[in-house]
Image 1 (cartoon, rainbow, N blue to C red):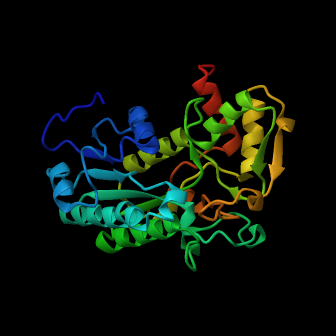
Image 2 (cartoon, one colour):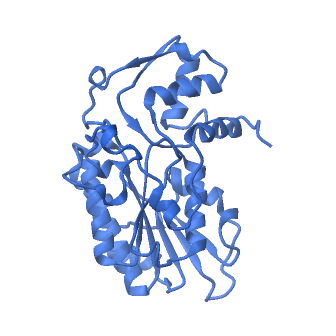
Image 3 (tube, rainbow, N blue to C red):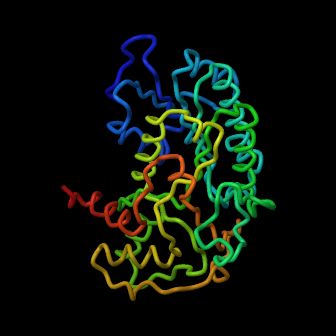
Length: 311
């Protein structure tokens, strides 16, 4: 990062989980940050969010003008099924410790969460515009989702002024990225055909668009519309994984007919995947924030940018 603390009163944005996908994107898009702030990335080597002394040391000079954006998470959905304690420590205990510190300092915590907090069994016809923030009912179907929901609740209990931002199906899309889009790009090179599930419907989200949205939120400040609120931030529209894979093939100049639809039952995983987890963007727009563009346009941009073909 190029920004340095100029004076002790300069507001600082702490990016917790700076080594992950979203944390990296936030740093890369720091030009979108307000000019008056310092960006301070904190990786897992700098802070153990579930350890109070570690948090106190890393956030020792936290003040009321500062912002903590928590991108740290245990995101191995399948691994969490057999590592409940590990997932709970990062997804629930850690956010609670962070929230206690931001509340004590009067700082603003923005905590990033997930569509997996919803059970994911509602028919699309019941939520035609996607889940709204208050639609959480019942228990999440996975350990990952349950620990993330526990983290949300712990954050708002410890720091009622905090803001929770849920997102979904996040990807960077580079040819070497480990996300779904990157994987499909590699499989297009390696296989004649690829089978992808067509019965899970969600909100694909380009990590760069999400990062820009979070910087806009930071710039807007903890106004009444966002302090203590749960917001949804995803690219607009909806798609199945099959839709996304077929679009990736099109974007790289391959025949979409090489992507074959299949069912979730054909690909059993340790953690069940939600059949429906589309998130409505109404809360984001109602807070005065710019809606993220359509998922298909974002996918086009992600691949074009990774190939250097956008100006």
